[in-house]
Amino acid sequence: MRRRSHPLWRFSLDVYARNRVEKACLGLQTACGADVNLLLFCCWTGTLRRPLNKRFLRRAMAAVSGWQREVVQPLRRARHALKKAGTGIPRTWRAHLRENVSSLELNAEYIEQLLLARLAKLAPQPVRNADAEKTVAANLERYLGLLGVPVGVSSRRRLQSLREACFSGRS
Image (cartoon, rainbow, N blue to C red):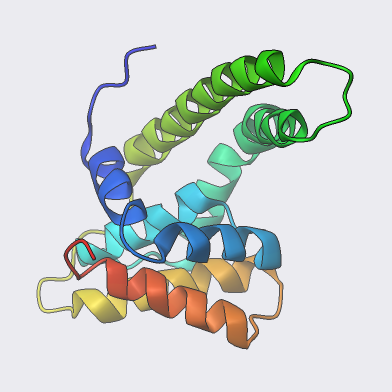
């Protein structure tokens, strides 16, 4: 699959590559059940000064939940399972298959981002004088609030890392 660039994808690749972001996103995924693409979507729209209300976030979550559950998560589980020894499959075979599954998983993540980018056209319009950093923070807080999981100290630190990465250069 040829992945064509689009603004959300470029933003996500750039921010995700920054110091501490991958660890922060995966930590929020594990601790809170957050979808990494939705975290990055909240950040991206926030940097554009587009505040996401709960109604719109619920719509975004619903738009990608089936894809996450039926496609992305099974691919992720398969990739993780292929890391483990003891499956009776030679290590080199597992490594090759894991590489292929990883590529499929990335394609699935890309498709989810395309769905979110399409939905972004219906998001609230930018607020001209809004503080982008505060908008990112509010979008992330609203999203995590909708997950209905208490956000502990570790998750707050992860959110801080993610927010900071949106406005810093590569570290």
